[in-house]
Length: 132
Image 1 (cartoon, helix red, strand yellow):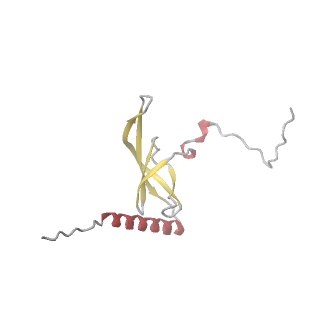
Image 2 (cartoon, one colour; image 1 turned 90 degrees about the vertical axis):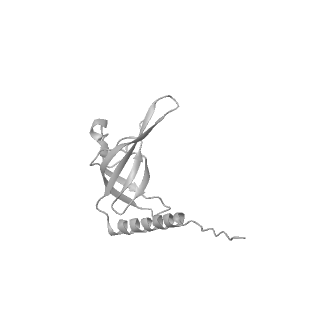
Image 3 (cartoon, rainbow, N blue to C red; image 1 turned 180 degrees about the vertical axis):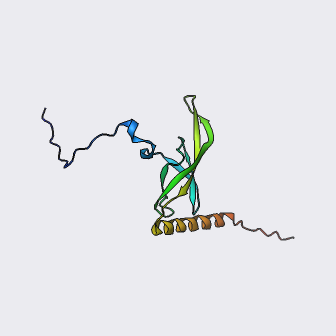
């Protein structure tokens, strides 16, 4: 069987798992809340304090990637899986770092949208009862 020639200009070398380090791992998280200084996220795995984290804001807000540093992590709760195992849920707090003016502008716009949605939700229609 003939080998396909490698068309790369430079050879690629694999990075062994033990050298990858946690900073190269991807974790799916849920964005729980957001502020001008940071965010709170939920994950199925504990995130290392001091680690760098990238948060992509949803396109419904202002699609932008923000860089943060994990400042705390703790267990939020647990659930029982169908297999009978116990799965923990973790929360982590992020502090945003090194935001560019464009990122800051997008974050401010996203926070304004969230505040407007919260204000709208908090407005309860007033009912007036007329005495008959």
